[in-house]
Length: 390
Image (tube, rainbow, N blue to C red; front, side, top):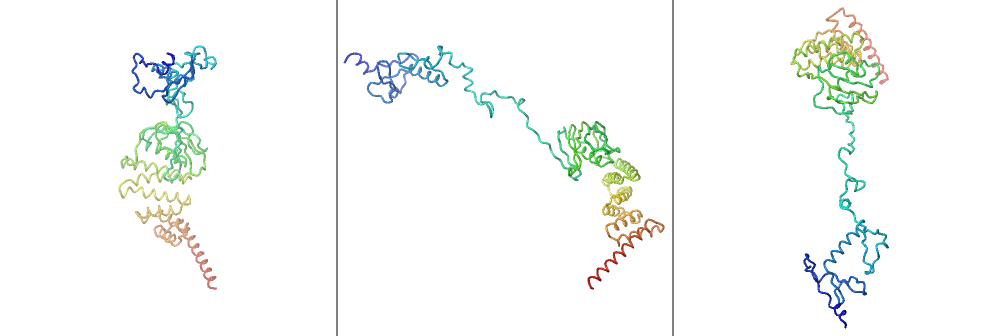
C-alpha cells in the first residue's frame, strides 16, 4: 500500500473554516464516494472509502442550488466532469444571469389582487370601479303613485306647507297644466295643484329631500314616468305646527278655490280642494268650526257628479249628524240612496226636504222618479212570485 492509498482510506482531517463553528452532527453529514480519479459521488451511508465535505463546500453548494432554482447555472470546473456553461446555453458572464435585488423582490411579492397577474401592481380604491347602485322604489301608501329614486338627496328635511320649491320637471303628459323645465312651486298653494298630476306631484315632493332626483310613475304604468329633480326648497310647516287661525285661513282659501272649480265644471279638482280643507280642519279640537258642514255638503255634490254615490251618502251623514235640518244634505243623500237602490231611504229623505221646503222643485221631481222606480220594482217582484207558484 502506497502513501496515497493510505491517506485516502484514512480520510483527511477536517479543519473548521475560520469564523465558522464545526457542525456537532458531523457524523451524520453526507459523504462523498470516490468513483474515479477526477470525480466523486454522493453516498447516503458512511462506508469505507467515503470522504467528508468541509463546511465551506456545503455553503458553496447551497448557493449554487439557490441560483439553479432561479434558472441560473454557474459553470462547473472542467476537471469535475460536469457540463460547461456553453453546453447549457448560458452566457459567458454567469453573474449577469443572477437576478438583481429588485427582481428578486418581485418573486417574493404576494398577489396584488384577487384576479389577474399576481405581479400586477395593486390599484388604489379611487381607480377601482364603484359598485352599481340599483334605483330604490318607494310606493305611496295610498297607492296613487310609485317613486323610483335615481339620485338620493341630502339631509332629512322635506318640503312642507308653504315651502317654495325649485323643481325641474320633464316628461309630463301634454295638457296636464304643469310647466316643463325649471319652475318654482309653492306647497299647498297655486292652481298647479288642480290637475291629477299636480296633486300627485305635490305628494311626491312631500317625500323628497334636497338634491333628490326621481322618476314619478302612475300605478299600472298607464303613463310614461316623469323625471322630477328637487334642487332646493325653503322650510315650511306641518299641519300640526300651524295655529288654529292659520288652519282656518288655509281651509277658507281651499273652499273658495274648490267652489270656483266646481262652477267651472271641474268637480274632480274641486273635490281635492274640499278634501284638503277638511284635513286641515279635522285637526282642530271638536266640535270644530261650522265651515266643516259646508265643506262636507260641497264634497257630496262633487262625489255625486263623479259617480260615487256611496261616498256622497257618507259625506251627507257627516253634515246631518250636526245639522239634521240641512236641506241640501238631505236632498243629496236622497239622490245618492236612489242611485245605489235604497229607494225607501231615498223617498224618506226627499219627503223630509219637502216638509222643510215645500216649494223645492228638484226634490219633488226626484221623489216622483223614486216612487215610479219603487212601483216598477214591486211589479217585477210580483211577477216573479206568480211565476214561482204557478
